[in-house]
Structure formats: structure tokens, C-alpha cells
Length: 385
Image (cartoon, rainbow, N blue to C red):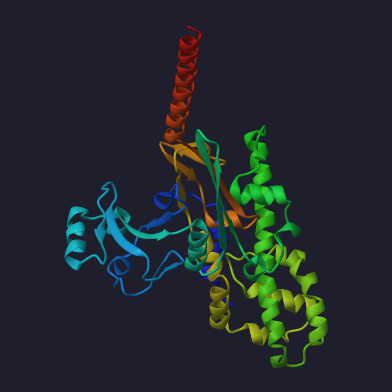
């Protein structure tokens, strides 16, 4: 079986930890005092995407936008947004301005929607990613007379990780190691020398590689089992074949597979384990298996290529940004899809709005109270005379 280039690229995305966010690409969320909100996605588009009709749904970076999203485009560094679709004349003009450069790298396409509440907004995001992960959000408002605190929480979580990865990650690495590899937290490298950090990362990388190999073998093995009636003279029954799945998936042979070379190793592993060539014919059609693997890992591809900066604008002044960083009036969370693999991704932000009217009312109450006191005192003095 020849190399499955699609899966090799995906494996490299994790093994090389290519999780750098492009600061041009972002998801801007604005929360208003009345609970309404808006969300704007900004991405580098291809020509056919920015020129697509606004009457047709569109897909960008694994996200699907229906016609109820407002679409505009802009040149990086220019705050002016232009209506979509972009005309051919506008594209040609940009090509002249950015001669010998890639136009998509110089422009952004924006998708924006307004919502009555954050629940509606999170449901919209879940639909946009086609349930690749589920978004849930809440907004709590705490009135404290002189000020009102707003706490916004959002959680992004893979709904059924076994659909993407059929073998549990915790069989290969600890929860902390998995979290560190995919999210950078907790910081397991604190206090370690450079050599010690490399030793630790090499060990985690080997375990993650084994996990990816096991997931691939588990998927192929399950597909062979589904087609067991096509195998001539199998060395074991269909029931025995299924019962031995875990033994093969967790075997040293699978751990030592090199997905960067060839998936023919899968056929060889089955041959060596069962001492039989019975499964080789079924696995010989490389085109079919490559297509199946590509379909299987399309969701994974969409997940790890999502790397927008998550920007939030809250009512009033931010007093607690959680794990985010405050820049001016914007709270920024570094995000990439693979961060959802070990555990859900959480955003928590608290802001405070000063109730100016409360100070005015309080001042007037005090003035009236003081005034009443002196009026009563003055009247009392007149009565005594």
C-alpha cells in the first residue's frame, strides 16, 4: 500500500506542534450590557471564496457559513470593510498593488452575525463547525448598586472524541502530559534544563506517535472486520478477530510503524501476527484505503487547522481575564483546534460597568437627607423662639 500523504500531513501537524495562531485570523465576540452580542470571523480567503455569491453557503477552514452571515472583505491594515462578493476588477487591482505577492495573504474575509443572547450565539458556532465541537456559553449579570459585574463563560468541547480518535489517549500519556503537549499547560518544563526538556518532549512525542498509529490501526482493523466475509480462508473466526483487536492495536509492531513511509506495514503486521496472507488481498487496493482514511481524518484536519485568535470585548472594564491577555479593551485567548483534544477549552472573563446613575441618586439622597436635617433644625429653632 503506498503512502497516504493526507494522513502524513495530519500526523506532522501534531508531532511538530504547529500550533501557532495567525494573528490576522480571529473570532471577535462583542458582549453588550443588555445581553445581546455579535460575533465576527475573519480569515484569509481564496479568490473563489471572496468572489462567491452571498446567496450561497460557503465553507472556509472547515467552517460553514449560511446566507444569514454578513460578508465583507478588507485589506490588512485598512479598517474599511467592503461588501462581498469582490469583483474581478477589485481582485485585479489588488494584484497590481501587491505585485509578485499572494493576494489572499493581504486580505481578510469577514463573517458577522448579531444575536439576542449568548446561548443563541454559541449554538450558531456549533452549527458553523458542523458539530465538530460543541460551544456553550453563559452571561451572568450581578447588580451591586454602584456597579454591575458581567461574567462571560464559554466552553468549546469535542462532543464525541472517539469518532475521531477510536483509541483513548490516556492509554499512552498522562493527563498532564497530554495537556502540556496540546495546550502548553500545565508547564511541565518549569525548572528543567534544555536537555531535560528535550528528553521529556521526545518521550511525549513518541507516545503521541504511538497513539496516532494505534488510532490508524484501530480504524483499518475495524474496516477489515466489517468486510470479513470477503476474506478467503481466514486464520481465525470473525469473533476471534475482533477479540484480538486490542492486542494488535497496542502491540510493539504498531508502536514502531512509520506512517511517513508506507501503510503497507499494516498488512505486514496482520500477516506476522496471524501467520497468514489471508488479509493481504483486501488491503492491497491502496487507492480505496487512502480514500477511506482521508474521509476518516477529514474532521481531524478541520480541527487542527482552526487557529484563530479569540478576541472578546466586554461591557465596561475587564477586572478578570481568566487565562486571556488584556490588550487595550480586548481580551485575547490563544486558540488552536488541537487544544480541544485532551480536554475542553474554557474562556472566563469578568468585567465591571460603573452605574453613574447610582452615584447621582446616592448624591441626591444625601443632599436631601442633609437638607431635611437642616430644615427640621431650622423649624425647631423657630418654634422654640
